[in-house]
Image (cartoon, rainbow, N blue to C red; front, side, top):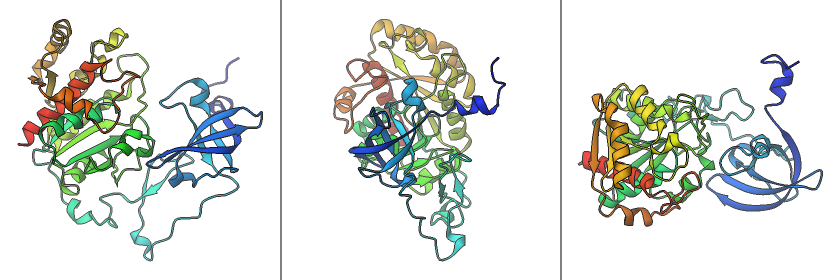
Amino acid sequence: MPDPPGSTASVARMVRWRSGTVTAVRRQWGGAVELAVTLADDSMMRALAYPELVGRPRVGDRVLLNAGALLMGLGTGGYALVVALPDRLPPDPPAPADSRAAGHLVKARYTPLQPILLGVDEEASPHRAALADADDLGGLPVVTADLHSALPAVLAGIRADAPDARVAYLLTDGGALPAWFSRTLAGLEGHLAGTISVGQAFGGDLEASTLHSGLLAARHVLHADLAVVAQGPGNLGTGTRWGFSGVAVGEAVNAVAALGGRPVGSLRISAADPRPRHHGVSHHSLTAYGRVALAPAELVVPDELDPALATAVATALAPLTARHQVLRVPVAGLDAALRASPVPLSTMGRGLDADHAYFLAAAAAGRHAVALAG
């Protein structure tokens, strides 16, 4: 007889625990460290640690791992995650002289590794004055995208026409919660005005409790000329119309519009994805912009698509024109800009040449955002 929902037995199966010893410290980027861990049965497991959460692992350390996603073949990257270095716990962070100056923003709330952070608009924040009464984006163009892989392509489109523009990235919580997981973000250091982690996401240059407060911080703290909103790597999807984390793209459009910004929709377009629901215009884009976004956005289609793909895209987007403006944007120079990206371009394991339309669509959205910024 199966265990009833919520029973202790069913909950216990949510985590597949492993314990082992660090035998090698491998790649490091941003706030993440890749490890080789030897388990009790002498098998090897690839693991990832976030030193800001668990301390910095060394060879010989015993580690406790959550290995569920790795063992089940789920998730981006294929890692077990370090939960603790039980024999060498990191010290407490230094306490501020005035307890009122401590951050109180809790993210990944009520999970064992919940961090307590200083929110960008909290009373103790140096940016409190700039945000206390902030309520308007002043027409800030904001590109909304489904997948994290769109970020460097959007940025390439922006840089093609406005190399000195200040671009803020808002990391939403549909994918990886720690910004540190993203090698893309690590590689884009110096190319962004800053990263703002919103909702349950954390680890950005600034922390915001909501997308709305994060957008205001992009405008009034980072003084961005443009912004990009997208989830972290490792999006969630069930193959159903509504069961995917990219639904939040439509909610981002609403947030941008509510604050007086200019939403620019980066469409998920592909001629290479073998799944019918993602061929042409992905059902993620059609649902998010067609059903969830209640405010109008400017949806960008790159000019010079393959004729068959262009026809499929136009047909799929026709029902959305009642609310949104669908724009064809010239793509001259965008291929070169994409090839000059400071980080590798990859989506669902496909690079630029394998899924050119996908990256071109994101770059065209960046180009259009620049035109709106003036």
